[in-house]
Length: 304
Image 1 (cartoon, rainbow, N blue to C red):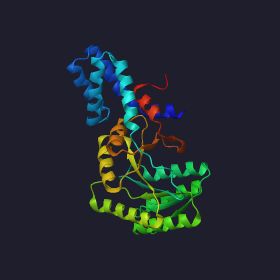
Image 2: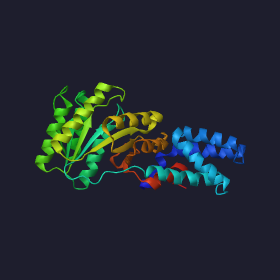
Image 3: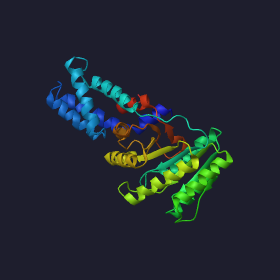
Image 4: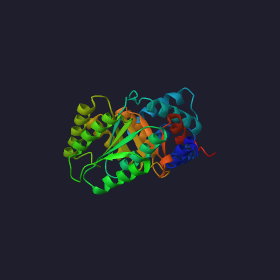
């Protein structure tokens, strides 16, 4: 399946909610009156597009309706797709990083950070890059073992300490090793943590200071979000960004049951680009984020 098809399949739940809602709306109310806009607001917020994004979109839609540009559900879909593209293009990507390109992966428990790191490592190895992994989640032996399994699978060494060790020490050793060996990419795993736990968030800040000192170069701070968590993902993005200045986002578990519309308010909130989305369990199901394909997948079935 093409990337467009995978993205479209992953957005099936959101697209279905929007399409069915719009169809029912125009059966009940064939004209765009104030009650129609109220119901449309409910539909868009229900698709996890967020209150602020929805209201700004509706402001522009009212002007388009008044001018006669939009008269039906198809017109609303076209305007929505164009608006989503505009918002998602606000995400500002970092310039390409010089080797070793360091990425610190953060997120709450259960979002799929370690698996995402393994998939990215395999993709980089396929592209001919040398990769080093760092087991910065020292709270769970299982996390270290999982990363080591991925390391063996993709042919990448894993820098790790014993369970309970200082994660910042692991990070320091990994950065020094990556620089000494001329590694192309260093991917750093971290413990899952609630964004509301100030002591754990402060630990991330410590890891950042270590990276900045040891690497003396820019690096990526990638937030991994679970698409099934809806508005909770927006709260996570906001608080992680306040703590570490997130530079990119990966959205996981966009498998057709999630409401992927949450990507839009996340990008608008933190002005960081989505680089990849996870649409399945396989390594090839972590796909590059394509803004036009995503916007189209929200409103159009790619299989038709």
